[in-house]
Length: 153
Image (spheres, rainbow, N blue to C red):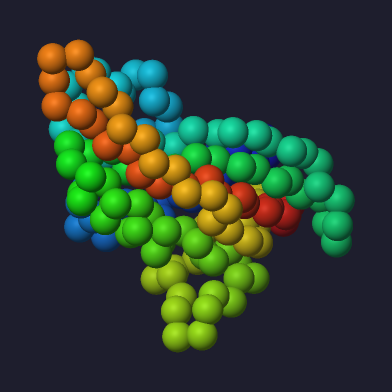
């Protein structure tokens, strides 16, 4: 059975963000927010939330455009900003046909698997939020909205 574009994208993003195990969030990368907030998880961690899945996209080959919010959640603003910057370093222009800026390239390309090619990965809009929890220190969320253009292999 063919893998869906959303499943392939979640897998590829998690693989890219956890590739060397030395990032500040370690292996704490989640694809939903509701089960992570407020349950005592160690911060920082990364949350991925699908915003829209626009399928099909018919250009050269059948494909899809998927938009996700990806953010770092931390106990202080400095860490959340640093995490958001590192997420961007790993994802922006990490598609197989992205060239990146002169002198800049992500460490590796997103691997869509045998059914999908993640052609482009583009940061579109920054995200900053301070979560004020009653009788507790604030929690900081920083990241961006990313658009992924995918093609069927």
